[in-house]
Image 1 (tube, rainbow, N blue to C red):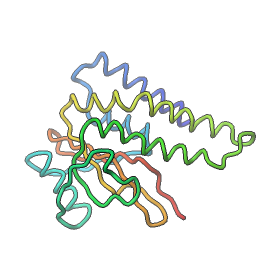
Image 2: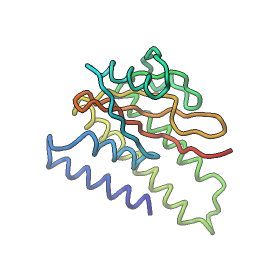
Image 3: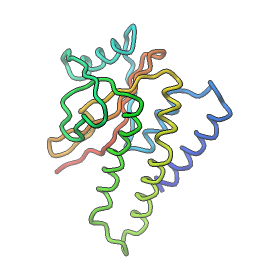
Image 4: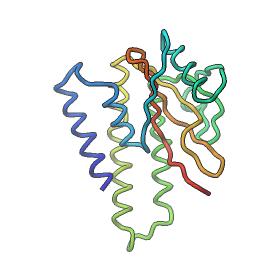
Length: 185
């Protein structure tokens, strides 16, 4: 059911953005990404520019001032990433692979006969992710956001996973898009 709702939301947001032009909001696009992945969260953070906003976010949320490290997707660790910083639009697009991996992991051990509906739902989520993630990221880029990453996304068994950060200078917000689900061991 989540897959059907997710697909309908992403489709409607994609269609409405075609007609809405600049009326499209960063918040709506982040919400679409959160539906495709494992959720999202919004934080209001003061700062003069994207770098200051992200530094203030890190300090407020992790209790210390840390150096921001620019990384591309290929340099990020899915589990136990220790840095935070900015990344390129290309890497923000590629980060969907982290969410896809988490979704594929959910398929492991499911019984085709008794859990066919759940399998169908997860496969639909993967399809939606693969077809809708990049267009939403590109729309966000056109709206002027900066992309980042953090190793402080949801986790389990003592391991935190990488998450996509979206910095909106105009609204002074940082959005976290979760690329994994948390849980217990």
